[in-house]
Length: 285
Figure: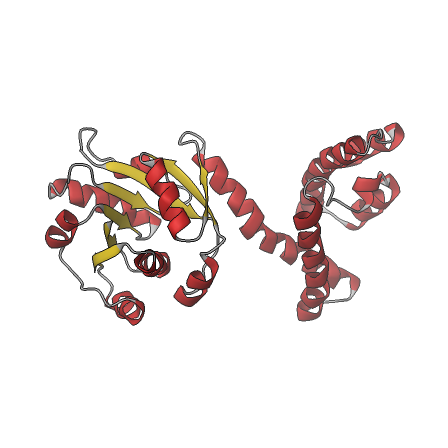
């Protein structure tokens, strides 16, 4: 298929390179950034074309701008009447639904979202990580989306349009909030006398071990620690050292851990200790 790219950032560039390698034809690109276009040409030598020239030539139009610009691009294309029957418009935002592309209900194009569930720091890193990356696919022409993801070496998952934001929130919790949790743990280590870089370097092997356990046995079996084993005395001791927001965060996460802990015992054919359950519910409320 013939495709074009609007926006030559990290994701757009990496997608173009891998799709071209898979046999699809990149007709050209359109971008307002000379810097990102020069970087794009280091990987794929395609011409910078005006929209009026680029859009009519392609089967698929990728809009890989910043999220805040996606709607504006769709409105501009609609205003210019660059609406090619049967053409598929695709954006790569995790938080926005495909519907943001549909400016005019009667537009003869199909709207689709393909989101790589991965964090890319650079084009070269993105090219290395695309294979094996999971993708969220949402909107029209989902079969095409699945095929494109497979051509990229990825793993496709169809998403509900109505609940796509929940998917993105889950990604934020797993990725961004992992950094927040690491920061909180570093602060608590500092309180105990291990601070700064030493604290982080001490915690990283523990975090890697937990990720390994998640890969090996999944949820809830990867849960360890006092709540997993029903040790209310240890949790009480933790809370005696915490106050304010730190205590609130600990309690909120602790309540989620308590549910997982009960599920872990249940999967083993056991019953979570009743007394410990009552004490922990009281401590974490």
